[in-house]
Structures are given as structure tokens and as C-alpha cells.
Amino acid sequence: MKNKLKEMLLRGEKPIGTFCGLNSPTAIECLGRTGLDFVIIDCEHSPAEAETAMELMRAAELSGLTALCRVRDLSRSAVLKLLDVGARGLIVPNIHSVEEVQQIIDYAKFAPIGQRGFCPTRKDGWGFDEECTVAETMEKMNASTLLLPQCETAEALAHIEEIVALEGVDGVFIGPFDLSIALGLPGQFDHPTVAAAFRRVREAAHKAGKLCFYFTGTAQGVADGFAAGYDAMLMGIDTLLLINGVKGQVEAAKKAMEK
Ligand code: 3PY
Ligand code: MG
Image (tube, rainbow, N blue to C red; front, side, top):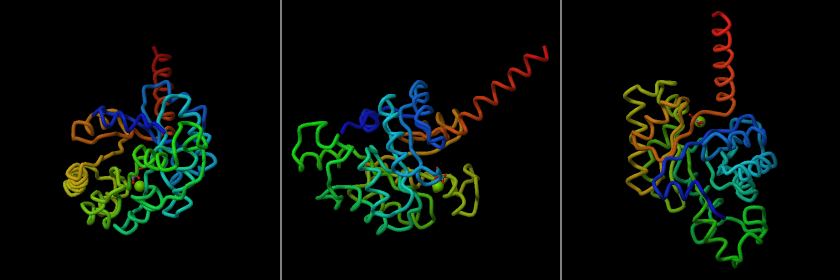
């Protein structure tokens, strides 16, 4: 029931992660040898479902990476299955209202915070990972599982202060693509209106004592994000890291061949 990522965050360290789009356990094992701290298995924008996510989590755990998952939709089964197979946190996309977030808290957190359903599952080694009563397991899972709704719609932005104040919300994950699109400025992350929206989300989260995660495509973006005050940074997607890494090597090889 440990969450190495949450422990890093509590110590004020600067975790770096990436999204999984390759959905390959071997690719995750490779990522475990790169210095990354965590991965987000993406059941929203990749074809992965809970069964695939479970295999990817096994690879992540064996490789020292904390595995979070992005849920495919806001249904109870989407939330519960990923938590039961062992996700140490959930990213919840496409939120439009405070009520939707409250519903997600009910699905994802055990009583007294929410109404998560209980069953011996992989999340706690079917009850054999630690000697705990059911009540102790519920409390430990609530404390160790990160629940991070995304702020990526105009409606979520308008209600961000209420969203981050909810008990059970551990932080917020800014979706820069979708939020910039919602603001009518697709991909213009440095536009003053978009930058002000990102700042509003970050400041609201921190004022409520919650975390703020941000997504970027570059190494410089990671450094800039931490300098701006984000708590954790997502550096792209494993698919893009693969393309960029190989592309750079092919270009370097061709340049060397010209000499
Ligand atoms: C977005 O930028 O909209 C995201 O959800 C990042 O993955
Ligand atoms: Mg998005």
C-alpha cells in the first residue's frame, strides 16, 4: 500500500514522469532504467483497458516506478477497476463540474471520505500484503492513493477553487492542450490568457494545500515547470520519447556519415 511518488511529494522532491502510450511492459521496464519516478498508464487516449493496465503496473512495480492511471471515463467501473488492480493514483480527465468530482471521490475513496466498494483485490495483495483490518486497509488506501482531477475545461477552470477544496481531492492535473483549446487558444501555452489560467489553477491548488501536476513535451519545460512551482512534471509520452530518441540518433548517424 506504499506510494513512493506520494512520499517523494511529501518530502518536497521533484518527481518526473511520463505517459504510457506504447502499452508495453518491456518499454516500462526500460523506462525504469532512465531515472524517471513514475508513469501514467493512459486509459483515456490510448487503447489500454484495466486488464492491460494491470500488466503494465506489474512491470512498473518491478522497475521501481510508481504507476498512476488516467481513467477512460467518469463511470464507477472505470475508476474502481483501475484502483482494484493496483493504481497508486488516478488522473480524471474532462471534468466539468464540482458535482462530477464529488461523484469521483465517492467511487475512489473509502468511507468516511467516499463510498468506494471493498473487495480483496490486487491493490493490497488480496489482503496479504500487510496485516490489516478492513478498516485499517480503507484508511491506508485513502491516504496513499492520489486522486487528481484534470483541469482542462472552461467549466472546471471556473470552479477550480471549489474543486481543489473538496476532501478526497489530492491535487489537480492541468491538461494544457485541452484547457488551451477550451480557452479558444489551441496550443498557445504562453499566451497571457492561457498562462493566467494555468497560474490560477496552480495557486488555487496550493492555497488549498493540494498538489498541482503539469504536462510538457521538453526537458526545458520540466525545469521551467518546477521553477514555476508545479509539484510534479510529466515529460511527454513514451511514444514521443521513442520517436525523438531514435530520430536524434538517425540524424546524428547521417551527419557523421557526411564527414
Ligand atoms: C491535455 O493537455 O489536455 C492533457 O490531457 C495532457 O495529457
Ligand atoms: Mg486532455
